[in-house]
Image (cartoon, rainbow, N blue to C red; front, top):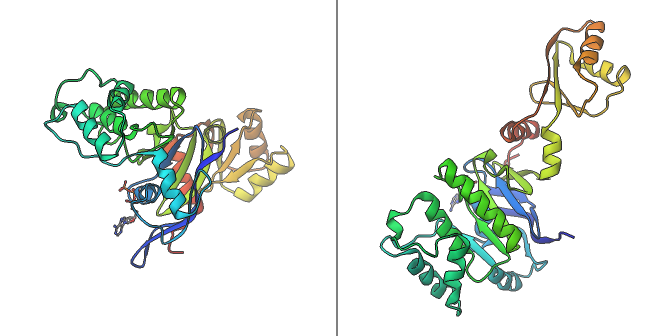
Length: 308
Ligand SMILES: Nc1ncnc2c1ncn2[C@@H]1O[C@H](COP(=O)(O)OP(=O)(O)OP(=O)(O)O)[C@@H](O)[C@H]1O
């Protein structure tokens, strides 16, 4: 049974009069790969900084392992690993760099360095950091985040700057660590499809607000198998759908199109009924939407911003 390992409850952060995030309630369950998705400035880093104790909420609550009392939350952070643009020494090797962080974090076991480097296949690497590819740098950052065997690892925009191979490798490492080491990941990205293949749950952010939190399966159900209808007279079309075709599972999107989820009877019958009703059909297609389209629709539908 998955339980919430980390939660935020109506979390707010203001800089001056401006909200950086407003009323954000996130629920991360044990064993998940949680993707915090949103364009630049959406508020992802702000939330992650609060998770890590680097910034204080203006109001609201953060709960880790069910603890909300600040002192206990701080203690719980010992079970968390972070990657926030770690700065590495350019003329030191992977081993020397991680050794530095081991000491900084006060981890007594010297074997930890080799252990975490092995997990990202950098244990045999002898070159200095300066000559690493972006992918290797990311892997090194992950290694540092894994020092001390944390249960939860928070990664802020780890995919930034990676080439397609680097992204594929990153996904593989995260999935392996999640499965084999049972690490719960919270990963932010401003490129929507990037975490598509690995995330088990999504938090969609826009302009400081959490628009939706959704499990992978539910998201897949919502984005796959949709039928889109655009006609000249919307109300008459919905009447035909409801009364003649007994369709109830539909909604209207921001472009005044009717979107049917899982309409399995094919478009021919729909086409016939709409034409029989005297409507002009501009569009009638079956399609799956991308994560990008889903997100943009969500932003349009909600049509809100944090200053409302
Ligand atoms: N220290 C600060 N002082 C003032 N405003 C800030 C500060 N930090 C963040 N903000 C503002 O808060 C909002 C959210 O920023 P945040 O960095 O959390 O977004 P993000 O989703 O991580 O985007 P990015 O990918 O660009 O970092 C932005 O409008 C930003 O300008």
